[in-house]
Image 1 (cartoon, one colour):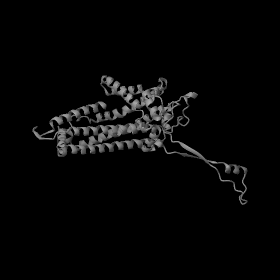
Image 2 (cartoon, one colour):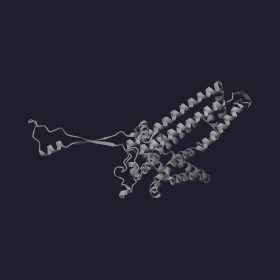
Image 3 (cartoon, one colour):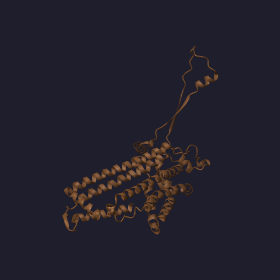
Image 4 (cartoon, helix red, strand yellow):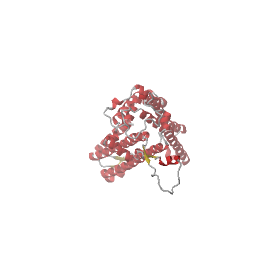
Length: 391
């Protein structure tokens, strides 16, 4: 992904620089110069690239803060409950009150116990961010970023070095699973940094031991496998449908029979629905289970930043008392009740809506900037781009 962005950025810079030096040129059907567009000024290039970089940062902040940090806290939070008692009314000494037995008198004087569950902190994005800022400061929305950068850099380096040796997609997929599993200790370190209160320890001193990390190898491998299935099964289905036949000749779709186009859209929709099913039926449980298993191994000296039941309803005994100190995969998922599942799914829907909204907003801003920079020549640029798509 980052390689593609780097390539696009480099080509975009070269194109804008060439346009500044020579101006845009639209050619007619006879390949003759038709009209010249004003040169793209340096200040215009600076504005466009500043907007593009701001857009990338905003999308990254949404994906990391909401999609990673808030989602992780939502996956582990156990709403706290407050217990209180209500004393019964004082016994009446009215002579008209009928006499009661000894058992009835005892029952009447016993206090009543009430249990009220507090609203989860992660029920709203705003309350979660506000809680993080109160507990960990203004930069808490990027907590764990150093670990995440190291994790993805190591993964990218190994993947790019080795992936060229695998000609088949299956080999690349298997290597991705192995790479994620091998980096399980770093992944668990990131989870511990995110779910706990600020610690005086540096993140590399919080990396768990190899013995502890062995307990999360299986959940990590299952999560990585599910992630690969969500990618390759829809792609394989698209190949079975033959949707890749005309990828190199997009002009085919302009002359294809309407009935065939309807069939292609139906097949494409079925691929999307299969991908969506895999995400919610396989990837979602696997990711939640992995996060909760990792969180169950949070060291005793670290306090969770949100209410969190370390015992998972009495299913986990601390390692210091002779227990496993780690919740099983089945218990990790079973203790994640339907209310929490709905809360996490609702968060993902909100994130998607926010990303779409910000994308449309930046597109509008970009069009306005191009209008400001190019003036009446903007429609010529659009015409040139349209002609380029036909080629």
